[in-house]
Length: 173
Image 1: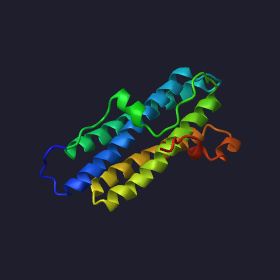
Image 2: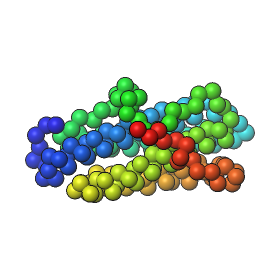
Image 3: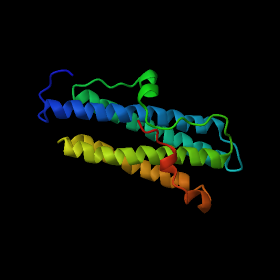
């Protein structure tokens, strides 16, 4: 950590940077998962879902940027390489070889739900360590993910929405 005049305290800086980097890794992973779905989806609603996946990938890329810049602003180092993401992402690996719309919708919505659940926990953690700005960033990310999840689930039949996707997409360490 570099010296800084920010007043939240060194311990809060270090803990926030760690929290941010954990989510940066998952955001990089989530972006790649959205692009994987975008490139490989097939089905009768192809164009709408293909474009939705690309839009979501763009949102997640923006979240990555915001998260990384906050880590740097706290005098930390944003760990934004692919290698760091592979090492630290808490998301379940995206299943390769799927093509149909419903499989991609389920896989991506599961990953977004898992990321959203962790981001909600991060809001509380950042608040507890005295970093309301980082908590606000995670609130913004969660708000966007909730909207993206709604759009994804709007393309799924009700029987697939009744499942609990968040439990399927998190790798607990």
